[in-house]
Each structure stands twice: as C-alpha cells, then as structure tokens.
Length: 272
Image (tube, rainbow, N blue to C red):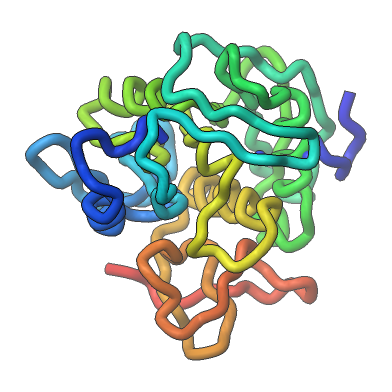
C-alpha cells in the first residue's frame, strides 16, 4: 500500500541507418507527448491534445536517440547494471501498489503502471517513482482541478507501460505509428515509454535521470489531461513541461515541472 503523497518512486535502434541518420530522423519527431504530431508510415498525423482516450493515437519523442546503433544497450543505475534488450515478449506485469488520492482536485484520474516481462525494472519501483512525480506539488495537482490515484486493478483512466524498443514499435505500429525504436507513443489509454529513455535519459536534458523521468511523466500526463504544446516564454526562463524540449530549448533552461515551488505555472506561448 502506498501512503498518501508518498512515492509510488520511471530503443531497437534505427536499423539500416547510421547514427547520424537516426538522430536526424528522430529530430523530426516530437517530444514525449500524447498529443504530438505523429509520424505514420507515409503520412503525418494531425496534432491534437489527446485529452481523452477517444482521440487518435500519436507517437511522442521524449528524448534524443542513443549514439549506439547496436540492437541492445545497458546502463549503470543505482540498483546496478540494467540491460536494455531490443525487444521482449509483449506481455506485462502490473505494479501491485495502490495509492490514496493525491491532490485536492475533484477530477480523480486512476492509473496503472505496467512493465514488460523480462525487463530488469521493478514494476512496483517504477510505480513508486511515477506516483511521486504526480504527487509532487510542482506537478499537475497544483492546478486544483486534477487529482491522481495509483491502482492495481479495476477501472482506470490511463496506463503507463514501460516497454522494450521492439514492443514499443509493435504497440505503436499497430495504430499506424512509426516510432523507429526511438520515441514514445500514446495509443488509446496506453502511454508507452521506451525502456531506453527510462534508463538512459536524454543527452539533450541537463539534469539527473530522475528529473528526466519527471519530464516524461509530466509531459505525457499533461497531454492526457488536455494540455497542448507550448514553447519557450523567453531566454533564461524555465522551459515549459509541455514544450518539445528535444527540438531545442530556444534560449530556455531545461525543466521537468509544470509549476514552480510557489505554485506559479511555468508555461509559454501555445504552439499552433
């Protein structure tokens, strides 16, 4: 059981292309967003905020590609070395953690956290980290409208799935989305997070891995609750959590949170 406000503490490489080509391809995609302009094979999907599960799915890039072009990678984490297989079985284990409601908003959004079987990431630990992000006072509960509750069973509003690159490609590809093992996507109620991004973060983000994971969560959930893309409000100011930071900061400073500690919204001009 997860106490109120407590943590519940979050690529198949681009085959047939050079690392530079892969980087260029991903640079054309958008960052960690359920409402991003997506790239489907041979077409571009229109941008939408994807505020509800009924909206069309769209891929999301929450990082830049790894320099490696091998079919798998590994990284050292605090819990030891974590392997990143190119693909997995496509089945998932659900975090067996249930939290109390965090936030005071009347719109309570229930969510689950799942991790692909065979992946060296604990589902309960991932759920703890995601829950901690959603409970943080710099997060979306600060809007006074939205609250969140982690559940292990029953009805839910969305599911966060941490999946290998190959499985990410299969889930997203089934909806006609081309993720190239590089980006996240949102399909229906599923927010699919590439394992490589969870483990390795992004060289574009100047901060610890925990902060980058917070950006993934806040950006994706921001779309889920109805927020669209924003851009830099001015040089030296924090980049909005809803900004596609992978495409460049435009003079802003990397930032993972929608609000500051005083409760001010760290937004910017809306992207048409």
